[in-house]
Image (cartoon, helix red, strand yellow):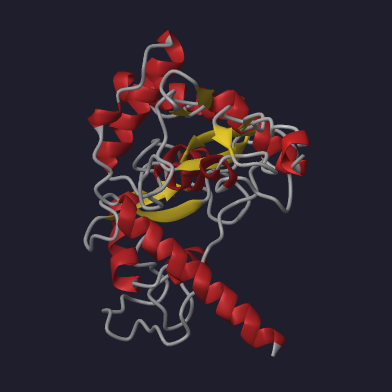
Length: 314
């Protein structure tokens, strides 16, 4: 008798399912290709898995943003709704949620509670026309923005020099043969275009309060403490558009990211409405006209830092 007659029939292999989205996967795999692409296998892997499981919507077959509830983009890196991971408390290992790239950028160095409180306060200020109340958030995890160093080749020789002793901006005592006082000089040096910086400082100076005023919050700006959330910084009302430079508090500048002023207020009002009522976030209210350019600029800056670090090692 042929030995083939005595062999047992092969039983079909049991289907395997993705640990995150429950989709079918090949043998010896735990995750489908879609989920595996967004997992960080080097650090906080378990936290990434739990965050993705919590964000998965089995009906819509996609991941939803933790803060807005909108379905996220999985493949287009330049999309503002691209899937990212955010620490609910900055720096706390294992406390991750899934959110959109623009929300992650807007949240900056705030905890979840601080972020929601700041958004609600921004919306109140816009509606009431009152200054921002800084006491609503402690900014416990704020470490300050990464301010660029002033360029070495920049000069002020083409500016008209006033009399020694009268700052061109605040009328304080100046350096000898300089048109600016020491604090104004240091502030101007943090921006690459000094002419534009001077114009922005003149537009933001309040002679009555004798301080620079943030154009977004109405707060009096700090000029010396670099770790303060209200440190004076420069922000374009229209990103990367000459002639639109203004002075803003560091935390407001970081939260505005690559949004125009009008887009920022639209997003703030919609987020505040979503947090307060729980209704769906309307993603069609904003076009993110400047987002792609912001991403490209940030990638160029990161590449420049990597090359500089490599050159130092060599």
